[in-house]
Length: 154
Length: 154
DNA sequence: TTTAGATCGTCTGTTCTGCAGATCATCTTG
DNA sequence: CAAGATGATCTGCAGAACAGACGATCTAAA
Image (cartoon, rainbow over all chains, first blue to last red; front, side, top):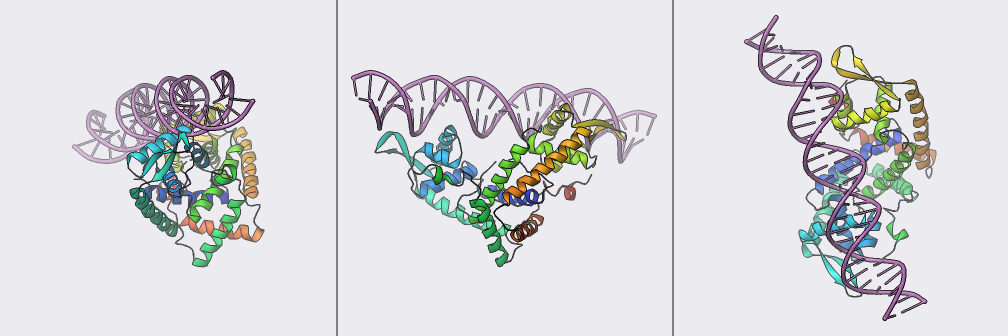
């Protein structure tokens, strides 16, 4: 978690807001195995993409060995389960349990609350403006971590 | 370096933009000992705050033991030097060398270029709007890392 | 003044995370 | 069927960060 330059206007403000958001989000995700990344894995499992762990790892920008024990933890808490892929006996298919679905719904709601909390100082109009501007920047940002399907579709 | 939720609009866009900025900034700061944090230390040394390493560490949000070898590296490259504090023989005062000043000037310029690069997709008006909105959020963000003097003045 | 406690910077040892590489089972291609 | 690629896992290692201890020094109370 490299902190950016203090001096630069953009870097400073961007970093401060981002860290504020991450800090609050981490509290929300504290109980979830794997933290933020565990949430991402859970999300993917729920969306039922059913892709291999390896492509999933690449999509999330983590190492394949990390993915192994990430899923281990998630499975140990009963939020997710590994099922054999009927078409490839090497691979495992990831699916969320009922508890996983419930947990994900709760967590997502809590994250939206965090987002609202961060945006408190802005008026509704300003919030929309900010979203638009950030989206415009984000889409021009060429980040494989956030643009996964462009590099490796399921 | 915890990545936030993919789903949340704000979290996703904010994270993508921030990572894009950090990634570019890291390239600029790659040659500097200590990377981004080394730059922050160098900045503080130049601003001549002359506070103790400990308060400096707290301000930058790093451990005191980390601060030790951070400064070690910076000093080894001749960008910074530790001088004994005349008023307290336990403490050391941090000051930047001439080389440190030059390096800092170059690096700061490069970082501004990165910032401009990130903001490319926006019109000048939009850039100013974004800065304003982010600043408004940042100042309401209670982040000790970015609001150091509030918690521990020099 | 003397003494007890706090503080500064450093050092040591430990823990944790993530990566490279090897391994085994399986799929695919020739 | 043989040879190579691929999926998931495991092992070992390297780097970073933390807790704790340490010597030196400052500060405040007796």
